Amino acid sequence: MTATSSTGSAPAGSLADEDETRVASARITATRLGTALVRDPLDRTVHEQMRHFLDHDSEPALRSWAALKARTPEELKSRIAELLMAQAERSVS
Picture (cartoon, rainbow, N blue to C red):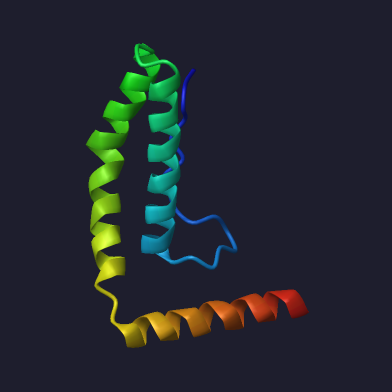
């Protein structure tokens, strides 16, 4: 079994900002890789994908995670309001 990496920039029309997208994508990728390792712990392709993830994607994701955790309550409330407004505007159009 292999797990493909899905880290990257936000899809067109995404409401998530760069840090939110990076963290979500990294979590999905890490979960897929972990599951693949449990299913077939000796799959060389999964090991290569895990190495690639750790070498290229994990550090930016950890920096984004730290940035998200550092947001103040006021910033979080503002971000929630922004997302709710954007979602409401999308549903109207």
